[in-house]
Image (tube, rainbow, N blue to C red; front, side):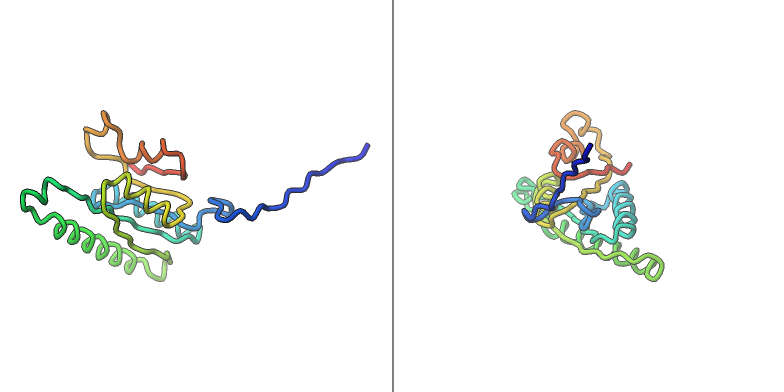
Length: 159
C-alpha cells in the first residue's frame, strides 16, 4: 500500500492575516478606564508577539456640537494629545523591561467606523477594545459587539 501525500504550496495572493501570529494589533482608546486596560492588554500581546501596537483614537465628529458653537475639534484634539502623553509616559516607565513598538493614530468619525477604517488601513491582524461602560449599548450594541459581528479580525474585548 502506498501512502499519498498532498503537497500544499503557499499561495502568494498578497496580504494574509494571522499566518505567523499577529504583525499589527490595533487597540482603540478613548481615555476611559476600560480602553486604557485594553491598551495595557494589547501592549502585552504586542510585546509577546513582537507585533506593532497601533493605538487608535477616533475623534468624534459632532455636527450638533459644532452648530452650537462648542469647540468640539479643540476638545478632541486635546484628548488625543493627552492620550499620546499618557502612552509615552507608560512606555517610558517600562522601557528596558518591556520593549513594544507602537504608533498612535487618530481617525475622525464614530468609534465603530473609525476602528474599522484603522484596522483596514493598517492591515490589522487583531483588534483589542475595552468593554463599553455605557448602559445604552445594551440596546443598540456596543462598538465591541459590532466589531465581532463584522467578523473581519479576531477581536478581544477587555473588561
